[in-house]
Length: 80
Image 1 (tube, one colour):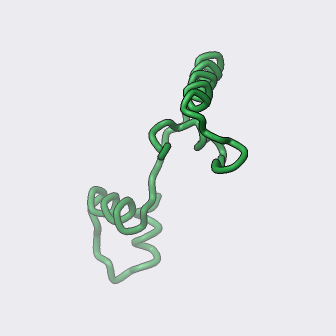
Image 2 (image 1 turned 90 degrees about the horizontal axis):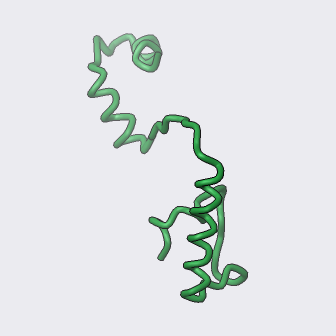
């Protein structure tokens, strides 16, 4: 769909390969796709509980220096 729309909008562009289009969209436009998937609700709650307890152990002050956007607060890879 994206390739066809691009070629329609820019008729002077003769053709573009799917890998080139993907590279441009992901690198130059900072676009990403994530596949939606089912998740185990009980496992997710348990993991969140464990992360919050670890943060409490290291005395993270949730009231003063934390901002949670959606579920980003529970992504342990972005803690500083």
